[in-house]
Length: 181
Image (tube, rainbow, N blue to C red; front, top):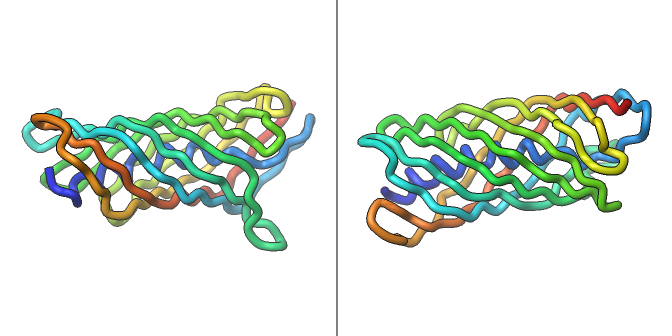
């Protein structure tokens, strides 16, 4: 598998990162929308040949999360997302899914699921859904739209039909609506 194919699955992995995008402060009884949030992530994992024209990336995306406010971007926490990305080696199409943990600055955890589909270098578009959390994020609900893009991935052969690699990318979340009971 060449580097651009690996980058394709990483783009899908980035989508998972999007799911992690839940960093914002939340208060009991709050019902709010965040227009835009961003994460610049680093991915690590392995890609496996899983079909004649298919590969599967298994790894994680991690990085800081920034919320766009009236005063510009504000770092609001960190995320890590275990991710699986299925990659079409012949057409560049990808599907990704992941589960994320976002740690807010005060230590509260937000859990999210993310899924997307797309084409490498164009982006993996999908949704993020909040599934709960700890402390102030306990019983949070909501979600929004996600777009993940990745750069070219560096990889090292790790065995027959397996490549270990890392890469970077960006996750953009928009229209993030959430409710706190």
